[in-house]
Image (cartoon, rainbow, N blue to C red; front, top):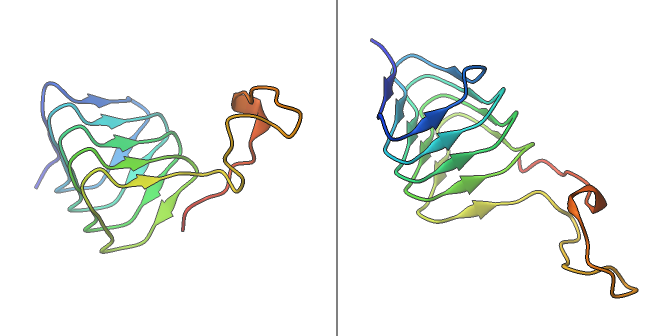
Length: 110
């Protein structure tokens, strides 16, 4: 068995893909992500840096899985679902100042 990666997808060279995994068109798998055996990453799906995915996981089209998510074996993520990572998501802080990337605390979706 082998890994199947469509030409229009982007898979970082540091990502690890298990045997039998398929990455469909326009999907993106970022640096240090690890996917188990027999996974399917659908069209336009996103797997963030350092995300850990077990065996036989299906990410449907345009699903977004942000770091530091950890998904066990056999998980199904439906089309266009978003697994985010901020306990208190807001565009602005209590003083009205716009929040930036460093203003949030990463919280893994498990």
